[in-house]
Image 1 (tube, rainbow, N blue to C red):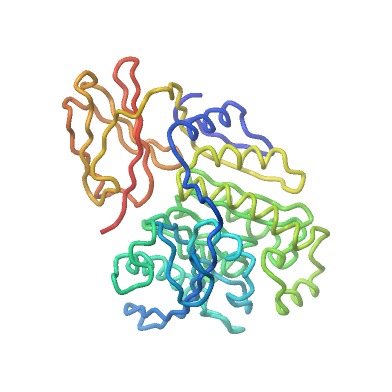
Image 2: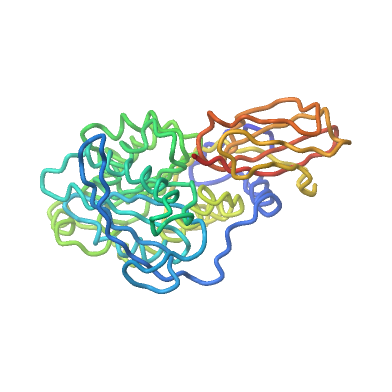
Amino acid sequence: MTRGHLIQTKMQIDPQVKNSVALAGLILISATVVAQPFSVGHKSVEFYDSDRDRNVATEIYYPADVAGNDVPVSVGNFPVLVYGHGFVMGWDSYANVWNDLVPKGYVICFPNTETSFSPDHGQFGLDIRFIAAQMQLEAQDNNSIFFNSLAPETALMGHSMGGGASFLAAENNPNITALVNFAAAETNPSAIMAARNITVPSLIFSATSDCVAPANVHQDIMYDSLSSSCKTQVNLINGGHCNFANSNTFCGLGETFCGGSGSLTRTQQQAVTSDLLGLWLDYTLRGNLNSFAVFNDSLVSSTRVSYSQQCLTVGLTDLSATNELGVYPNPVIDKFDLRIPNQYTDGILTMFNLVGQQVDQRKITSTIDEVDMTSYPTGTYFLRYEKNAKILYNKIIKIVR
């Protein structure tokens, strides 16, 4: 497969792409392995956003050794998810989400704001954006329960109104890694317009029997508007709007009035969503390319979904090389030293972001060369160094101070 190949798929993935990505994942990247599921810890906090003079009530669920409120966080560096709730639904309608993702090693935060019948979509989007930034500050605060426990990788998420607000939060946001939403609804200001200024990997779930926010006037247009280098829309066949969450009176009433939820049960819909979401997050937030291959295989084989996908991927052919490419420090805040064995100097270094876009290429003439990543967004980057027939690989993680 050639470097920079653009894959645009409808119902199928190029097998060559799947094989290349799967092999790359097996050789280049070791996934974060959780020996056993974590218990679920919970903490209620009220952050203060001084820029808006606004209190942002937040419910946080996190990996713990023992379940409970305000219990210690398990040892680890866990990716952060910030999830916006649906219209008049509230964070407590999404126990299915935190009970699924926290045991897998994710911290998930729910803004407990804009729960009235007249929500401010713009402020809700800013709440989601603010919490994502605040959690990274919590990771650096030795008085916080989350001190040294959070990875820099962050995904913004949401359902219905919260899905639309997640677009607003992700627009021109250099500090996030990915975007995910479920039956996202158009907002004011426009989520569709915001999508044009979103470039991070994005996953959109929709449902064919959604009468509250039908895909053809909401998620389809959002997907088409996204500027993401890797974007996927998964459409659950006979799925409904409210089944992405647990049972909620107001959501259920709205769905009843507009025509129902389809034949796919809530349990079935959440199971399909959970399987695909877990693989995709493992890829985008943990750098496991093998999970991306399995994700694509699952899309092809599932009888419960249709999908669209546009992803720029990178082909890696010779993956048998041992890792002789040194990087220090790793993670990096601004600059790192690239260290190359003497016999391999005068080669070419190519850097790719998580979705395979080439972000830099340069000739290396010495055994130690400084690489400046100050202007790079946070996230995982892959290094490919080539000298004649010899190819060396490594990865580096960019974090904020």
